[in-house]
Image 1: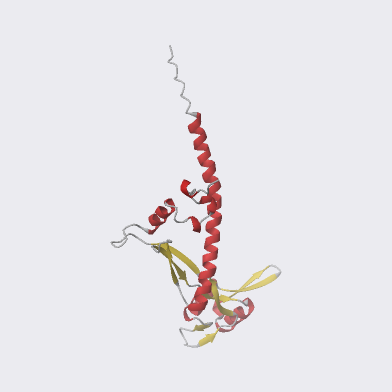
Image 2 (image 1 turned 135 degrees about the vertical axis):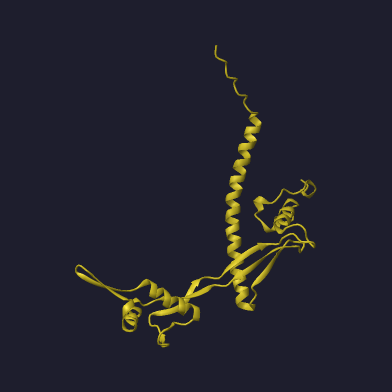
Length: 207
């Protein structure tokens, strides 16, 4: 005789409803937080870049309303690199000065000429390192002004946020300080009104 499997007990309907509601609420708030975060990053980056251009500041502290430092945003400078902007001029220079690095491929109905990638990379790397479109021949010592190459921005400046770490003076890390301030309602003026904690009953205007 087979044993009957016990029928599972259904959870409390109220508990199920509350769990589903919490999920729905957090999903809705998460979308708003993501948008607010993107907007805040964009606004901060714009203002920090304006500040840098005006007074040269590269680092700004993030503080709570009471002045407690919780982190800082530092400007990461952009980078510049040599780039080929005129393929024909660059190829002609290689052909005339370094013919062994100039490749001629005969394909049915057409002839394709190119520069060996390794050599092109070597020239661009040296130009990037010196900050000028020049290449020094290691054999002859001749300094070439390389046509078709310019030093241009390769990566825009950015801003990096870091939080403070615990120390003897302030043992609580910056992230935890922010969380505590949020729980206390101290950040309501800085974040989405929809995420602000409800006002205390004593603060509710009388009818």
